[in-house]
Image (cartoon, rainbow, N blue to C red; front, side, top):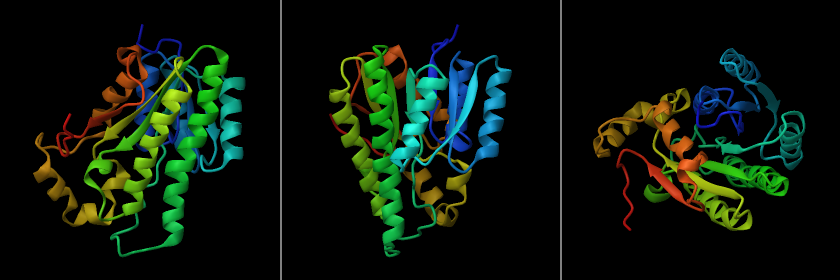
Length: 256
């Protein structure tokens, strides 16, 4: 019996990267999983098949979280076809990966980051969270944030601004959906996903700089962040809501 035995879990962006790691980890803890994707259809089906091999149920659902119409379809699929949602992990985010410097000021890039990270996260919290509340079952929502809100981002300032927006959404919906639905945000460290490894600045000195400044002297893997997410999603954190939990190897530290 896992911590999420027979729970219904929705992980956005779980066709690849950190989302895929999370989806499989929840299944390994006994959950049935909705594998969401937007462009990685093949990856999503592979993840779903792996979940089924673990003896759990899995379905895939496509959608652009920055589109309210798409999010409504995701919510209807989850609560209709899948029978509900006990845990939502808002993993999808846009880091403006191709941007090398703050001097690359591109309105379309800025708009996309803000649309995905703020508007998309809000749509997901609103539609899934309200259904969790109205069903009477309650649930837990975990937003994947970033320690960038402490350190800032000279590379892509809009990314830091967007993740600050997620903290505002977290606090607001933690109050709006209380007491049945908890909403928290993980302040994740740099995770060496393929996307990060391919980023220009990461390949040109940024990795070494981050490593020097990290007391635990290592760059996190996606697997390192699974535990904190599951903590926030489980009853282990049942007296926490509206919180921002840092897990960054000490790269940035916040005073009490």
